[in-house]
Length: 135
Ligand code: HEM
Image (tube, rainbow, N blue to C red):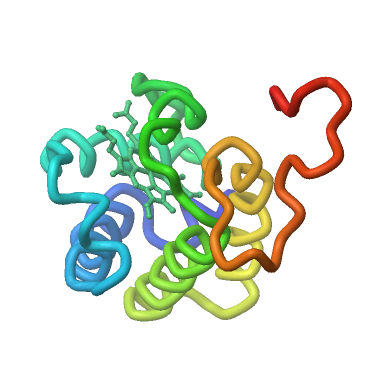
């Protein structure tokens, strides 16, 4: 059974996205990212994306993750906070801790595509890439 089915399918993903956006937009550090976003469209795409990412029917039609986030200057700390809210949201809709860990693990590789800014200096982003750090 996919994670998608285990957490309750479409209804649960839709509810999760609603709750998740309330958290993101209320956060003092992350809210600013969403001020100019088309939140309705974003929710629809997040919903499709999460459905596909969790092993449900694959119908994602949005931009790829690098293209969607390149202009936002997202840091590692932002990304961590984002996943923290996602984990919190999944717990609220009744997802077991082990499943939440699986979801976070599945999304973690996207950090490389989504994070494009150096945050507090605690990371090594692009420091020693002889090719110029295109990827
Ligand atoms: C695993 C982590 C993430 C996933 C799976 C994800 C997923 C998505 C998806 C599916 C879209 C819609 C793409 C489109 O419009 O075609 C999107 C857009 C966006 N995301 Fe993310 N995202 C992630 C992390 C983040 C983080 C950390 C932030 C900011 C703190 C963020 C802020 C935004 C914003 C502001 C947009 C709208 C951009 C625009 O339309 O100009 N995302 N994201």
